[in-house]
View 1 (tube, rainbow, N blue to C red):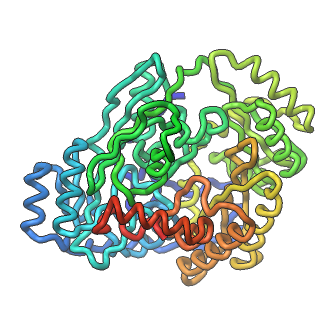
View 2: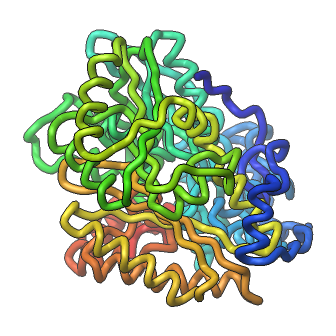
View 3: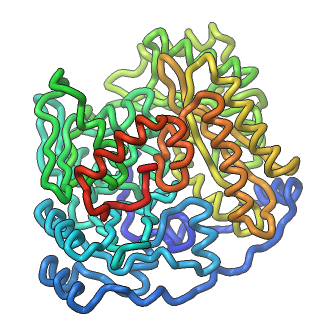
Length: 525
């Protein structure tokens, strides 16, 4: 499977490629009409972006620093850098709310230019938000404006080099502006791959993967992105932080982990050294059926705890399976019942590993369904956000949220979140769930929610998300496994880490960013 880098911007009020947007397939539309009714949403409102608040002198300084072609103040460029791609972000964009538009989009081409931009921002008290692919779904691209002279979107699109490849150590140094397909294409020329494929893969960037502690669909085999990072470079208002002199050390706390997941609040990542793998000679994806979500989850736990992990391992619950959500091209089409598991194997010779995993799954009650449904999942693995947009078009509020916990608490967390969502949104709500990231000690739970839109869908989702988020914390789980904190999760993040944890983060912020210009209001409670 090849990954073509996108050659276009994402739509301002939808996900992804405008050419890929379309109406619901017939089977899906019939299902939606039966469950929710169809109410065509009004067309997106097109409004003028507010006049930039930057002074002529500030704009001239930026143009002298970067060149006039890399300082953009036009409506379209600023509109496309307004917020991210959560459902609330899209609802606001469709309603014509562009109040969070940056005052300018600036495009540095080097670490030195990023440092110079930060110095300029400090001098003029301008808030800065790093921009990679614009795929944030937790408010990470909407910094606080109050108290600042303006907001700069630091678009890292010019920083797209594969700087170094070390095939002895099996590492590579990537610049932050590379989008997922671009990074994989450059590595493939060297016979290598990174193997990080989140649902946002086609648009998200290397810098974004690191800044949000991303986790991809092949995490079972290749690991989370933070596990791939062995070094990085961070530009801060206080200077440069270079980390990663060795693969592991005992030289105090690992500061790499402090930077990973910091969401632009501590600095701007300008290079990442990652572990890479040889391109796999073989790839096989297949489907399995289990009688229940609990039985399938127990099988996943067995694989994880007995060193039998495939490259891809994911399990849909009964509702997600019944709706055939694993096949984005045939949602609402026929299914075989039970719970669908997708298992993928990649490597130089997958037969041996596949045989061991298959024997284990059969022994645990699984029924093999063959490769056709596995291949269907691969074909649609990045398409779910397009379905979300099409549901919004017909008056259905659709959104996702995710968490993670230990195996012993999985069932309690699963029930608590589903109950919280249906209690807040009502009986006509459908809540789906899958497990797509598995560890020896626990797993993630990824929920998809669909319900008829209320008169005020923003408030409708705010209340539901708050109730579900509190249910996660009350169950002892994390507020986010891979979507990051942003602004949406700060309240529950503070509960998760406690007052001492909050004090530590605020102290680091004050030391690295004493004037508070770095993505203000994001991540730090």
